[in-house]
Length: 210
Image (cartoon, rainbow, N blue to C red):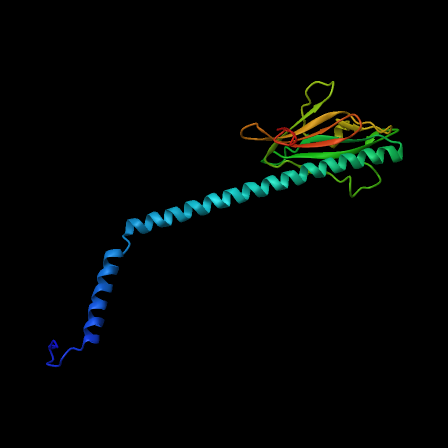
């Protein structure tokens, strides 16, 4: 049995403990992370976190835009029904809001009276001014008409609506596109026909296409 420096004998268990501690300390010295490795690990974590956050943000923006498109579709259908029930034409005037620093559009609901177009006096909560498309460019096309340029809205000009739901149950056929303001790509497209039937097209393409 080996002797310790103190003159006592070292037991087999003590030898195993000392050897085990020595090997453990050597292992951790060999496996320790350098500063560069730690910095690389932190950089990867930050990069992955940024990518995940960006994807979540884009997903939320797309869901919000889809909700907006469907909301506009529902309001146009409601305006068409209201026009038929009241016997008075209803319409949607689209224009830019130049008071804001970002690209924002708004929709103003109008009804035809004997004196001309004015805000509806019924269903005022439904036909409230409609803010649209923050960060997107809107493009309106109407069947049989030249390209429509969306002008800044000025209540003093008493401008007529571009999209009209006629009292007879018909609607000006056309389409409204939400485009990426940076690339010009179509993000969403809303189409409607003469009978006011609505079709929503993500990316401007029918989901039924193969």
